[in-house]
Image 1 (tube, helix red, strand yellow):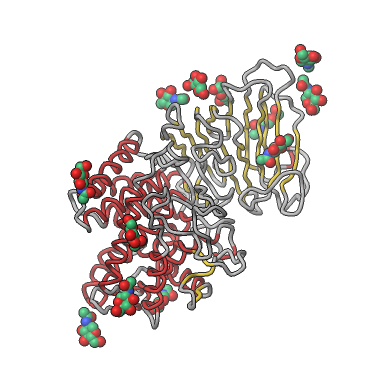
Image 2: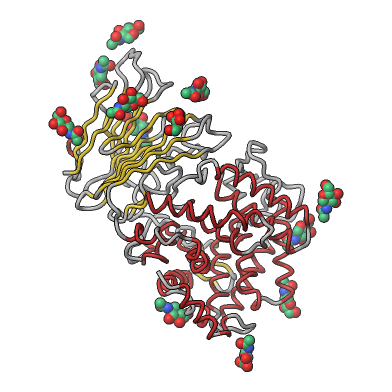
Length: 546
Ligand SMILES: *[C@@H]1O[C@H](CO)[C@@H](O)[C@H](O)[C@H]1NC(C)=O
Ligand SMILES: *[C@@H]1O[C@H](CO)[C@@H](O)[C@H](O)[C@H]1NC(C)=O
Ligand SMILES: *[C@@H]1O[C@H](CO)[C@@H](O)[C@H](O)[C@H]1NC(C)=O
Ligand SMILES: *[C@@H]1O[C@H](CO)[C@@H](O)[C@H](O)[C@H]1NC(C)=O
Ligand SMILES: *[C@@H]1O[C@H](CO)[C@@H](O)[C@H](O)[C@H]1NC(C)=O
Ligand SMILES: *[C@@H]1O[C@H](CO)[C@@H](O)[C@H](O)[C@H]1NC(C)=O
Ligand SMILES: *[C@@H]1O[C@H](CO)[C@@H](O)[C@H](O)[C@H]1NC(C)=O
Ligand SMILES: *[C@@H]1O[C@H](CO)[C@@H](O)[C@H](O)[C@H]1NC(C)=O
Ligand SMILES: *[C@@H]1O[C@H](CO)[C@@H](O)[C@H](O)[C@H]1NC(C)=O
Ligand SMILES: *[C@@H]1O[C@H](CO)[C@@H](O)[C@H](O)[C@H]1NC(C)=O
Ligand SMILES: *[C@@H]1O[C@H](CO)[C@@H](O)[C@H](O)[C@H]1NC(C)=O
Ligand SMILES: *[C@@H]1O[C@H](CO)[C@@H](O)[C@H](O)[C@H]1NC(C)=O
C-alpha cells in the first residue's frame, strides 16, 4: 500500500513525469514500489522474448518454434512506452504499427477489425485457413488489443507521433465496428453482457473511440451496452462471470478504464467505481491469505491452485500486498499459464488509480486472514442460467469451501468448459502444499451449498446414470492413494445416495487413465448411483482438518 497523498505530492514536484519529453525512469519510479517490482520484472522477462528484427515478441510459451504473438506484443509495447529507455519508444512504435497493420480490413468478414493472433498465420478465411471462432481467430482480441492501445494513447500519447496516433485511432475505429458484429447466439458468437470481461472491454472501447472520433452512434452504442452490463451487475452487485483468478482480473482492470478515461456524462464513469468497489469487497471476503487462493466457486479457472498457475488476480494483489503474499512464486515465468505475465505492465500502469477505488477495509483482509466467516451472494448469466446462481462459501483457518447452485442450459458453465468450471470445491493447507477437492461438472442442474465443514451436492434432474466426479489433488506425503481416507491433512466423510464403491483413476503428465486439466495432475474419484436407483443423486462431504 502507498499513501495517495505522498504520490500526488511527489508528482507535483516532478512535473517532467507529465511533460512532453518526460523520461521513462521518471514515470516508472513514480509508481509505488510493489508496482515497480511488478512492472520491472515482467518487462525484463519480456525483453528476452523481443525479436527486434520482427518487431514482435516471440510467443512466451516458448513452445512454438519461434513463432510470434500479437497480443502480448501489444502489451509489451505499452510497457516500453512507460519505460521509455534507450530505444524503447522506437520499438514500441514499431510493434504498434505492425499490430495495427495486420488488423483484418474487410468489413464483410465476421472477424473484421480483429487482430491476427500471429504474424505467421495464412490469410484468415482462405480455403486452407478457415475462420473458426476462438481457434483461427479470437473475437476477444479486439478488446484486449483495443484497450491496450487506448491506455497507450491516454498515458503516453506525448511519445506517439501524430501520424501513428491517427493510425491507432483508425485501428480502434475498425476494432469497434467489428466488435459491433458480435451478438451472443448469432454466428457462433457468445458475447452476451453476462460474458463480463469482453463485454466490459467492448463497452469501453466503443464509448472511448466514439468520443475521440466524434462518432456519436459509436459513443451511444458503448453507453447502451454498458447499461446492460450494469443492469446485470446491479441485481446483486456481482459480475456475472464470477470469481475467476484470471477473468476477475480482466474485469477489474477494464472497469478501472471505465472509471478513469471517460467523461462525467458516461454511465461507465458513473458506475465503474462502484462496480470496482463491490468486486474488490467480494474478493476480500473470498481471498484466503493463508492459502493464497480465492475460495470457490470459480466460474472459470486455469488451475486448481493459484500458487501454481499465474493468475491476473495475483498480479493485482502484488500491487497492494506485495509479491510474497500474492500467490506468485519468486520466478513467475515457471508457473502454469505464465504467458499472462505479459499483462503485468498494463496492470501496473492502472494500479495507482485502481488503489483509489478500493475501500480501505479491503487491504487488511487481503493481507491477513480476518478469521472464520461465511459468504453469501448470487449472480446471473443469461441466457445460460435459468435462474440466478446462489453462491455460498465458508472460510476458516487453513481451509475454504465454496459452492454455487445453478440450473443452466449447458454443462460446464457459460463457457461450456468443465475443465475451467469449478462450481463446488474445497481447498486446504495439507502442511505440504495446497490440497483441493473439486466437483467436475457432468450435470447442467446442481444444488451445491457450502457450510462450515460441509459441501452438499444434489442433482435434482439426475438419475441412476448420474455420476459425481471429484477431482482431488495429488499429495506429496502420499504419492499413491487408494481411498478417500488417504487424503492428506483433511478427514473427509462421504455420504449420499451413491454406490459406495467408487472408481479411482489418475491424470498424470506421463500416464494414468485421465488427462491433466490446465497442466494440473489429479486423482479422479468417481461415484456412481446404484443400478436402477430411483433416488435423487446426492453426495455430502463432511470435512475436518487433521
Ligand atoms: C524537455 O527536455 C528539454 C531538454 O532536455 C528540457 O529543457 C525541457 O524542460 C523538457 N520539457 C519538459 C516538459 O519536461
Ligand atoms: C524499476 O526500473 C526502473 C528503471 O526502468 C528503476 O528506476 C527502478 O528503480 C526500478 N524499480 C525497482 C523497484 O526495481
Ligand atoms: C509516420 O511518419 C514517419 C516519418 O515521416 C514515417 O517514417 C512513418 O512510416 C509514418 N508512420 C505511419 C504509421 O504512418
Ligand atoms: C479500416 O477498415 C477499412 C475498411 O472499412 C480499411 O480500408 C482500412 O484500411 C482499415 N484500417 C486499418 C487501420 O486497418
Ligand atoms: C448514426 O446513426 C444514424 C441513424 O441510424 C444514421 O443516420 C447516421 O448516418 C449514423 N452516423 C454515423 C456517423 O454513422
Ligand atoms: C437463492 O437464494 C435466495 C435467497 O436466499 C432464495 O430465495 C432462492 O430460492 C435461492 N435460489 C435457489 C435456486 O436456490
Ligand atoms: C431446471 O431446468 C430444466 C430445463 O433444463 C427444467 O425442466 C427444470 O424445471 C429446471 N428446474 C428448476 C428448479 O428451475
Ligand atoms: C443437503 O441438501 C439437501 C437437498 O438440498 C438437503 O435436503 C439436506 O438437508 C442437505 N444436507 C445438509 C447436511 O445440509
Ligand atoms: C473420471 O473417471 C471416470 C471413470 O470413472 C471417467 O469416465 C471420467 O472421464 C473421468 N473424469 C475426468 C475429468 O478425467
Ligand atoms: C456398486 O458398484 C460395484 C462396482 O462397480 C458393483 O459391483 C455393484 O453391483 C454396485 N452395486 C449396485 C447396487 O449398483
Ligand atoms: C436393474 O434393472 C434391470 C432391468 O429391469 C434388471 O435386469 C436388473 O437386475 C436390475 N438390477 C438391480 C441391481 O436391481
Ligand atoms: C466422520 O465419520 C466418523 C464416523 O461416523 C465420525 O466419528 C467423524 O466425526 C466424522 N468426521 C467428519 C469430519 O464428519
